Image (cartoon, rainbow, N blue to C red; front, top):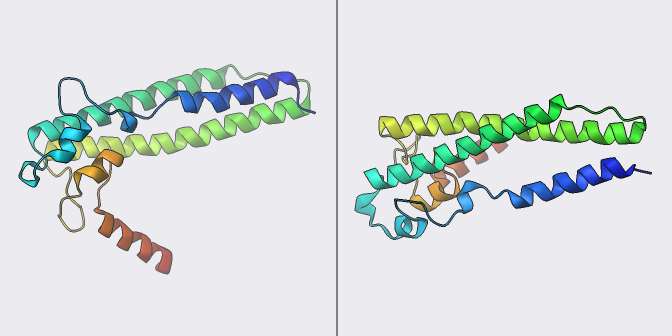
Amino acid sequence: MFGGKAVKKLVTKAAKPAEQKPVEQKPAKKNGLTEAELLRAPASQYMSAEQLAFFRERLLETQRELLEKADLTSEHLREHELEADPTDQATIEEEYALELRARDRERKLLKKIDEALRRIEEGSYGYCEETGDPIGIPRLIARPTATLTIEAQSRREQKQKLYGE
């Protein structure tokens, strides 16, 4: 039987992700373009200064949130609790393992964010690194760190599936 303390922590942990919405879900930006305005913009304005500013701000906000989560995780792991009940201890250790895996994925995302910010500065943001074609505003809104068009990404995934690369 699970001790009340460990079960309570699991419930608390499960509730937190629902409360924290990713930046990608925000419908509008302060002092700039909204997602709707980005989507309505003509193709001739693709990766204009305003659009680049929108994506730069979105990437920086995501970066800030991820760094805050990393700090909270560090604090949480330093508060390691020892439980007398082996089941409770196992539950706590599994929570830590899950948290560390999530932070590892976020660490990888932070690298991608840094690369995307670098591409914004270089002027190559929003263009496929394989074909040079525009990635597209809808895809960048959904995934601001995208480096490939949907077609190029599909080809890469197909190749990886076939050849195990």
